[in-house]
Image (cartoon, rainbow, N blue to C red; front, side, top):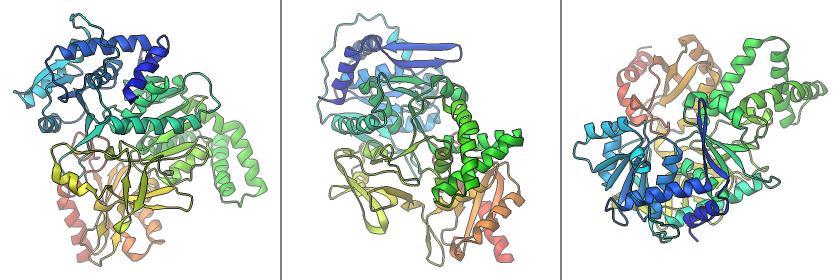
Length: 551
């Protein structure tokens, strides 16, 4: 059976159970199994009436909602290819991707999105709103059980982030999804092995990203209750209300949460701050196996009085794990949550690997690593310690880009572009992107990400750090956020003292506008567009090196 057959069978078996809960400021809207099946059938009838042919593309441009899920399932069930797009992305970028995949229909979340597409692409294909689909008066004919989907059929084109150029459409087929959902559900079975009833899952990441979409489909297949955030400003409130068993995160949120807790407790001061500070330090010493009797006392007090209150306020009382993907998580941040008693499981993968290559095994995770390879796939290191992968999770190719496909898929192996290493137990660690390597004039190769993370963690108020130095005599940095020259210099002095000369950051600039999706310097899923940042701040970069030369 395909993943889609499994999902529909689960919806039918548990027809009265709530599968999706759309959270609103004044309440929530639920969809049971039977509700969702009815919505899918309505959407399939609407799509069938548009004259779309099997294998045609349907662009889906909308924020997360129950309706998004229903039409996503309907598009695939009809044998069409869904092209999920990020609704916050610039209209010009969205139109460029749609022109690349030539959809027969564009489904927009609301009138504003439809109008934005029309302004940028006046002669675009037919454009409808989600409301048109689900408020249509077309008579529904029963299409249950008529899945027009074969195992090898493409089901989605998901566009990559495009950190150094035009986004490419990754084609995923039914086999990719069937294998991946089996793997993700298997790891979640280990996490929830002594649990009865539905998994409770909280979700705020856009479904148009591969990892987020995989979690959605996995939850539907497992019969979980997935609570959907519709307002990013309410994440902290909703997490405590939902009290999830687990949820998917990106490092940025965990790092921001950690800083927020530190700031709140520092502001409180007094005994709470003393216990919090000493208990955390004691936890680190215990992990390093050099805790004293006094350390054990502070840790016991922290575990009894402070840490449970932080956990409950942050994530409710039922959390088994935070699952973190999209980018490597800073080790100190992972250890921080572990010290509070919160398990953080890491996942590594790319859109081209159907979102996942490795997953931490619950209870056996190694901090700083991203777990072992998932079942049925092979991973190894190639030239330059590049991670290469093969298996049933690997995409079939980039849409209409045979040359790019040939570069990425060689002799059956997908070349990830990531540098990594593996320990004796099979746990992988991600060092950084090969294309991000900085090669100094001296010939030293430097992965910027670890140094950037160190600087970012050391500077209160910093939002982003980007290293420069290709072809130069030393490293320099651009720092965004509310920081001062003195703050940055103090942190760099401390870090530089422990590094070899070629890894020392000897110049920096502060106070530039934070990089964002809106100003074009972050990708849709929050990754740095390094080439564009270097071009945008060329003047400041040249000045940093000119000052050092003059000195």
